Length: 257
Figure 1 (cartoon, rainbow, N blue to C red):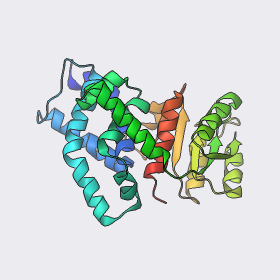
Figure 2: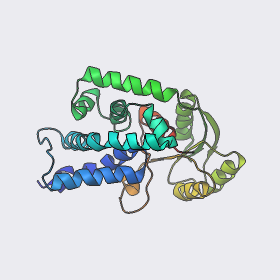
Figure 3: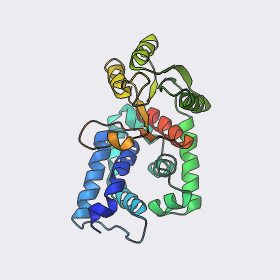
Figure 4: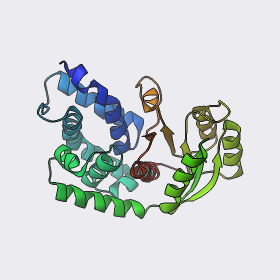
């Protein structure tokens, strides 16, 4: 099989991981492109004995680790809000946390990707969770038309110590509720009750408020095409509660107000 046939199906998810790791779509996509170009040119190795997803993530982190720390150090010198938040969470801890909670890897696979032991990977994840829990609590706007799913999401948000301002089932409700109280975080479905679009609702909200957004959808591949602006944080339905919690923590962690 060709490289495209073997690793292509996992590239959209690698972009998702890279965006969460770096905190932005442009930075994440740049790192993925650099890694794939190096792979295609034979400038980096990939372990063909591993599962393609594990091998791809392992190769990517090998390249990111040689440049990502340098980039973060430069950002720290510049004193940006994002860099200050990043500096509170060690790069290796962030990697382990995202690989398990956002990408759904087992502890053993996380250790394989990071070339470490499961015990060390577990320690990194616990360190990351403890650091993220120290971050600011905020108020959340949920845009979801399925009552049961909305209630599940609300429960997860409350477990993390945040508050839920409102649950909106339509584009119009979402805008009205956002205007009623500016949200600190938006969790949005794509298809809403009256046939309106959660994407359109989010775009209208972002036109007025600088707020992190997480999309929760049954069709994540529709938002991971690579040819237009895409969300940095995307959760697939049916979702794992830990994935939602991880995305919330990362979205708030990296957001620049």
